[in-house]
Length: 113
Image (tube, rainbow, N blue to C red; front, side):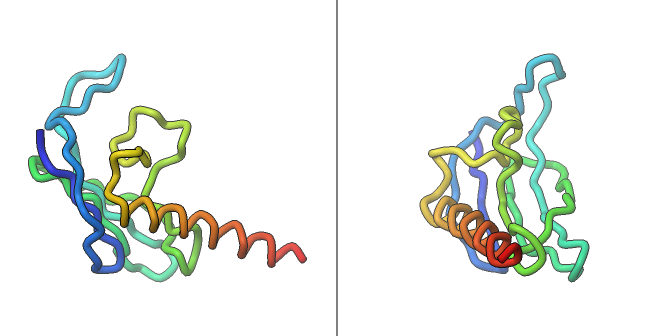
């Protein structure tokens, strides 16, 4: 097991324990990556999910809160992703995720009115 740490805009949101190896049905067993979230609009690396044992960091295009939803988690239908929101995420990370989702949908609703 290794710790998976959550950061947003330079703030530490906590950690959880996950296996060192990623098990995806139909694919080879491989080590977890760390993730850095890059906003293509402003150029900021605004979020990170770091795994203690990761050898690599995968940079993903994901808009920040200012330019999109700013969510840390992958699409909820992608069940095999280690960055999918789960109930064992640290409370501050879950709070951030919920707040980002609500804020995004409120902005979308305001834009249509």
